[in-house]
Length: 509
Image 1 (cartoon, rainbow, N blue to C red):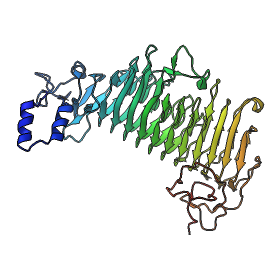
Image 2 (cartoon, rainbow, N blue to C red):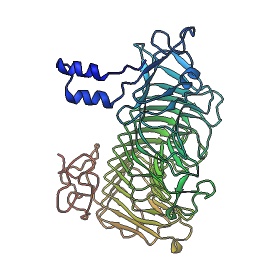
Image 3 (spheres, helix red, strand yellow):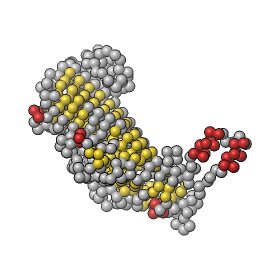
Image 4 (cartoon, one colour):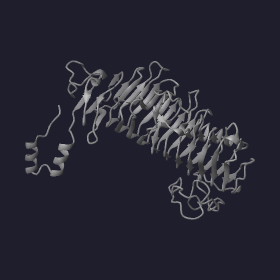
């Protein structure tokens, strides 16, 4: 039941000193909301949605329309089967919350049992989804999702918080379509009305054993010159309308058939403090750990990515077609069979302004950097540390352009440390005229390279990737403007000549 505070009651409380003017205003502005309970293990007789007589099926929960401040709570330790697809919206002051209740040791569990979606939040906004366990393993190989947010000719949708979920065993198919198969899928569909998300927080979720995608974005409102012929205009006909206010953070993703995270048609997104451990494990298609497509101004920082399972891409990071001003910084990449970084425009698309700085790459193999064919403009790879011991990359740069003379590449590699404790590898495949090297440190590496500049003496790289005292890489780099202001370790980058590599501090004794 919704409880209302009457004007007379407010006046009485205020006169008695029990309610200030400020709290009186807040009480009037923010609806208290109603609370509904679901326990799918309870007796269905007399179910009203109360805590004493909870609903006992997702059908009952779906039959109600929710409003600002409402809460839909699932009993810990109980399992509900099917699809949760609630209707209604919250508000900026009072979101609609879906979460759990009770003191049971096990989570409240939603099992899609092979449904297309376990949780579907369609054409709604101001929704907080929290704390549930979500799985969808039946009928493996068909298209399905754990959680899907969907807008269809809706306009702008605001105020989403997807947090604290445990999503596992979503056994979908190997699809890169509008719908796809994902743990968390952010879908913008339709053709009549441009739609996008403004304010989407995906944080502190645990995602495991998913076929194919971890966190995946797709929009039909994505057409612009920068994307070229990358997408079929009949399938993606809408003018580019990016989602804004997107943050993906503090998530753990393990054992993924395909990609860890793919951002598509966003502007100003931040991807930070995530752990991706094991991707590109069961998919025959190309996949990467964290990548962007048709995005502007994405910052990817403070992530750890490892376990790329094969060399069909299989690298930690990718600025893909129509990615503009993507920054990869302060990340730790290691033990990926595919390598560290892919820059990949093709089919008439362009990739502009990619920056990879102050990252650490350890035992990334096959290649450290790969370029696809197509225009790669304004790319800066600087002050990273690359260390290889168990895996020795075949290529430092693998350029897959079919014809260097007709492919416009601008790729500057400066102030990086490359250390190898193995033999072989570190060649260049098809280096284009736009590839430039300056002030790098190469140690334990014998290869033919285009005018690398820098040093070949031992940089005294420590096990923690800092530089030892007396390192020739100290204060030996090129000055780079707008360098982010700090190094991989959080040290401030001081004015003057910088160190080579991801460490900006003094030599460590």
